[in-house]
Image (cartoon, rainbow, N blue to C red; front, side, top):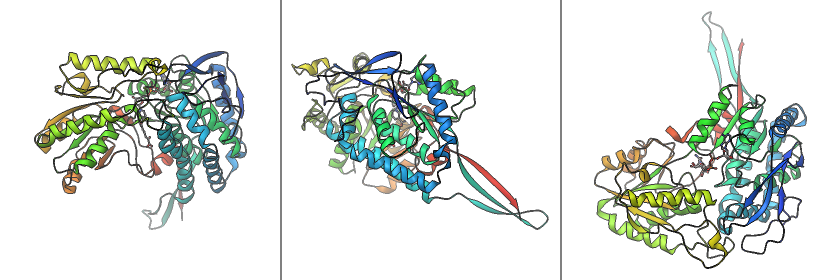
Length: 503
Ligand code: NAD
Ligand code: 6OH
């Protein structure tokens, strides 16, 4: 592990904390404090693990100006091959600091060390490598055009950076989701000002050190900490010097950001909330489906936008499926992140736990049958001050219930039976969201047929959260605007200039 000014003082939750550190903004290649501070809380035991300096409007302005200057400096002059090489170096620097990144992510989120080591940090490095390779290896279309007088013209498009990109990200997969946007933005030659979630400031800050290691020039990557309204988030989205905003978070926040971006007609890319359905047929591979659904409902304590909160099961196997999923839920070990047995972390904050528990209460009012969970685990130690909830399964709710319609974002789902394919498709599609669906069947013809009827951006057949970073990623309806991933990211983060040459 590499000791560094930002990372050296982090400790794993569950071990003794002897120091509270200051997480600073990173502007134009320097770590800078702000006028106000807020607390970074460890969700596993509720202790304050760091203070974070909030960027005011002056600092956000400085960051945007630094990013604009960097566009005109060394970064703007680099060819695509060298830019790609530097992004590979960022990935190398992340891998070199692997343990630091894991510790920082775990400290902020309380998620199991095993999960951060398997998912979050490797994906951060992969995001840089994939977009570095893609931008280097892919070309753009060209057309030979016939003109009315019988001559020809040649049309070809060139890719230019959009400019300064505002990147606003949530707390559930902080580093994965931040780098999912920063990597393609930089690959296309842009510069960025990021505003990570106020709940999870650490890994975005550590990434600044990886950028320095990799020789990314000052001003290319800037970090401004703070909140949304009347804070760094709003200052960034309203700033006239920001050329585009890419945002992952709640649908309601997306609507607010869209209004802010409208005044300067900024392009936006939004990855928003979901109320995702899974459809399980009686002919599925039963064990694989139970294992898959257990991941799809409980991974990261249900705090993944792709998670299934509505599970529809063919009536023939409904009772046995519910029983098996219950066994899975009850076999999960909530606990300290650094305990190898732990496979269920806390929720992110006291406030988010209150939201999830309010849905647990609402489910009862709406007439749900509680199959398992519905409360808070008791540990008898400091974890009782953390933000854990029990993994929870409900049945028996009408499709119109708020618990079936609204995103909860916790380790919870409602399981309902269906009798026909048409009924399952209709129920799955009966939502204002449209992020993901998963279909579990031994009949691939049926899998294809249903997949094509899903009003979502991503459908998995006999799998869930199986990612190929070249594929389009995003949501329909309230779940987002646009697609990122592969060429879709490159196209969002570029200004395409079509050049028509008469021959
Ligand atoms: P959130 O919308 O509350 O916050 C996300 C970010 O937006 C934070 O950095 C926050 O500070 C900032 N923000 C809030 N108000 C703002 C404003 N007015 N102007 C500018 N910035 C503002 O979301 P969250 O609670 O952090 O994350 C959970 C949500 O994110 C869930 O709804 C989840 O489904 C969604 N999500 C979606 C995807 C996806 O790919 N579709 C991925 C992850 C999370
Ligand atoms: C949402 O919580 C998860 C989003 C995942 C991705 O954006 C991805 O690229 O895998």
